[in-house]
Length: 293
Image 1: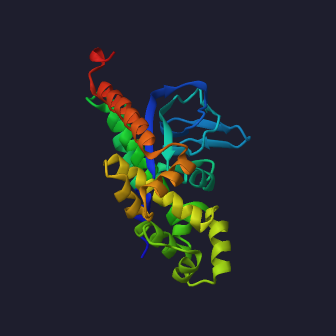
Image 2: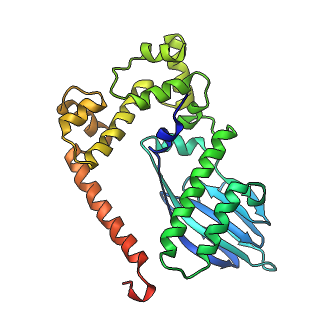
Image 3: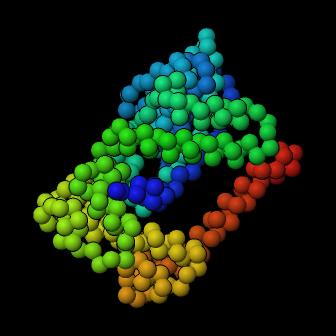
């Protein structure tokens, strides 16, 4: 059985709500490196994508645009729309493969999806209140929405390529699970093909076709991602190397530089600096408005 939870934990999802209230007229949304989540509470609106696609929502609806895409929202003048809008950052070592595999827009009526509807109700209550820690809570609830969307996509086979597609593939699912659960094993194309019960050539071709990269590149990415987590736990580099499948710290450092453009210690330093800035921002958001800078 494939442990999907362990794989989903490797996907970092961050949402930041930047608008909650009544929308009237036309608004343009764009971001260079983020997607967008829009939750319609009431009213009618039209979403116009840059590729000409048009979506109309006239009931409580979840609208998710995974990739950075310019789009416009037109609110019906006769029925002012109440919206919650958030930017979305999905970060994973296979980010490109994940985002490209998702539909370019989700538009899901909340009334037909009880799980989504419950989360939406809580989010709307927080978004239109003035409670303590309101901003942090609605950001986290938006992230729950996104996890529900990933699950929804898996259950309905909406993802046709990338890691998530492999999780529902009858032969690749066991391989993906094995690589994530035992990245330290000296996996070869032959041994992975045995796990999939496929010939070597068929396995290699199927893996590349479904996921988008070779088995060796995928395994390397898993190892580097795990090494990043262990670095943040301040484990010794030689121990990390052994835990993720390399004999020496120097071998890990060489692959690390090749993949990320930084030595492990340099990456750790820059990550800690970013974490400090993120903590400071969240602390500011938790303060009453009259105490914020």
